[in-house]
Length: 407
Image (cartoon, rainbow, N blue to C red; front, side):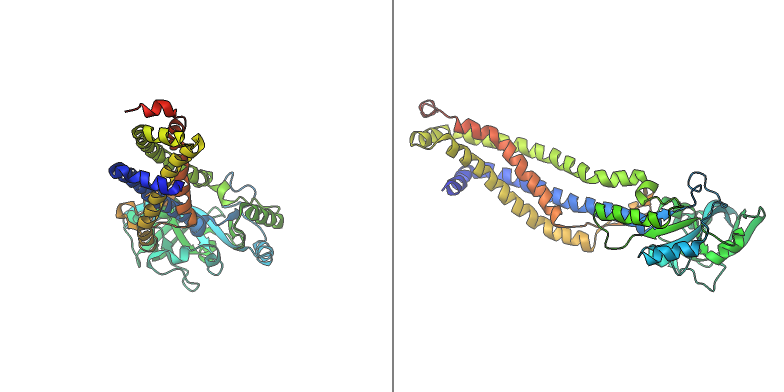
């Protein structure tokens, strides 16, 4: 009975009820849309960090991170890799160095990566992230794959020659001529601005490093999803390589890790601000409705309906409006979210722009889950209830004798 009375009461002033529902619907639609868009961006940023460079964790010689040096290498790499393989961890060694790359009249500082062609695809998607050209091959020791910005800075493309100069581990001058085999898509600040990938044998020959590795990129078993599972796997990994420094990606890049962790909290704050404005609209609308119906509430109480009934009636009216808005907002956002998941928003101006060391994509896609819909709708009902308490109390505390004299 209360629901039927509440529904009929709403449409006594159809214009006001429609405006209130429209405002709530717009808020729900925009927040569902933004929630999916934000989740997509955060997921893509983390995916780029892990899949295109950092991995889930890394391992170094204990002195390397404090003072990176070509001399601080991990010894006995084959046995370390074997131990990680046996424990279901994918790992790939990398040789790291720095130098100067030149092409024509242009030159720039570069970061050299010597990669294991067999193991690298197991820990990263860099071999798949080519904008042009092809990835390195075992029989091509003169090939190099370079970052997007360094290619533009040097004015080179696939097939161009690249001179690399550095200092070898034995103190001699390291120099060699390479052919650009491929150019990468925008991935990260470090790779885009100066990344030069060559094969492991080519690096060892250039830098005179016959053994060891500077870095191991490690991926945890795919079954580890929850924080507890991840912590357990990291502890297990470190037990296998106790003599090495083995930070997780969060320890290597704490800035972006903190941003990703706080993203959900920031989204809730933004939703709360929007719904606070909607709450003011609801409060005003419900107070006006209560003021107009003072005599009605007096009659109800004179007929024996208690304060609880009147309070519930006003609350149900507000909840009905919120329910209609939630349904409409969810229905309107569904096709938009489908488009954003499958096609995305094209932002050519954002392509390659760095954010916390990660290069943004030209296409911004959403990631939609049940939480994308549940969180905005649940928060809507919370604010609607809070905004309705004062008008509902005002109606519930109406004195029949005084309300009958109200005009």
